[in-house]
Image (cartoon, rainbow, N blue to C red; front, side):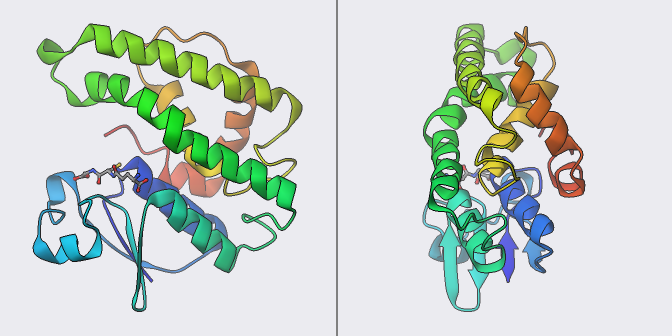
Length: 206
Ligand SMILES: N[C@@H](CCC(=O)N[C@@H](CS)C(=O)NCC(=O)O)C(=O)O
């Protein structure tokens, strides 16, 4: 199995974290940002969106990070990362979809503004709006986590992966006036005790 994408990408990190949790072996090739590759014709054949990650498993090709996490979890972690119980699985899937539809898009303005843009180029209106949106989105997750240790229930599952990566980014970014999220912070402390999270996610912001 081959994973194409740079280790600094939040979407690639989802897949690397998932594989590490399951002890799945893979090769990885750098692509994206400083590594280029995504603009080549060969990469376009793999993913016409020109985005990472891409999974190559034999002659099967898959892009979209959460779809890749679901597939690896179903194949190698059925009953663990991929809940067998349909309600647990529904909860896991719901928070994965919510990350893509709601949390991720709301976070882009602050991440790009504070990490990618030069200080003189920062659009503070967009950054502040994104901070406000993300705080209020994470309050939804915090409220939910008041009644459950992990997003799908009592155990860590694939559902914790996409939102866990955003929790790291939110809680480690400097220069944000964050309001406390006690349930989310308790869940985040549990993620931080996982070796795979430390190795593949807690690697800095880039
Ligand atoms: N919805 C896609 C988004 C993929 C995406 O936007 N990837 C970013 C990295 S996080 C990318 O490829 N950016 C271009 C680059 O790195 O050159 C997914 O979840 O896989």
